[in-house]
Length: 219
Image 1 (cartoon, one colour):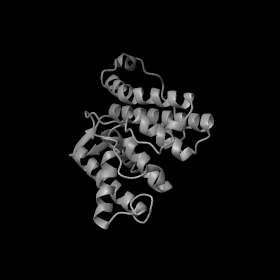
Image 2 (image 1 turned 90 degrees about the horizontal axis):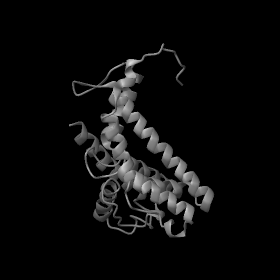
Image 3 (image 1 turned 90 degrees about the vertical axis):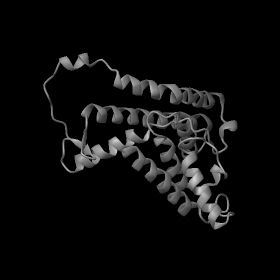
Image 4 (image 1 turned 30 degrees about the horizontal axis):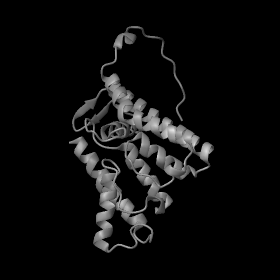
């Protein structure tokens, strides 16, 4: 049920955001009729997390729309699917953990079930790793080829989340930037899945040794 709820929110919420932001943009949805705009926005929201097909120029989107697109690509599809991204359940667990922490609760609960702390830690680690690599790769593109940070983030997130769409700058990138994208596409297809399986099958022998706790200031 959690997967269905998250997927529905991302699909229709993403479509609503894209439609609202691009409704009158002549470079994207502006040239379509109202029904076509709604359909194109819905298709864009779905394809960002699965197929990678597009119906309008991605570079013509407004900055806010590209930010929404980056987020949808980063999240990707559902766990166990062939879609890319960090997966819907991963993000859902992180958000639930943040909500529980804001309410002063130690346990993460959803639908009358408790999510193990190890799962919360694994989800957070995976998300932070992919986010860090995305920002690192975008920085390389900006430095090596002088592209805008906005388009660099778009290209890198599309590569590491194996979406396959572009703002059109890929052919103009140099060898270094193209190699970064190639490595990220390979990592996104195999690396994220390998890390996820590693989390599930990790040897818990290290837990036999416990150190004294220390308090750190958060925020």
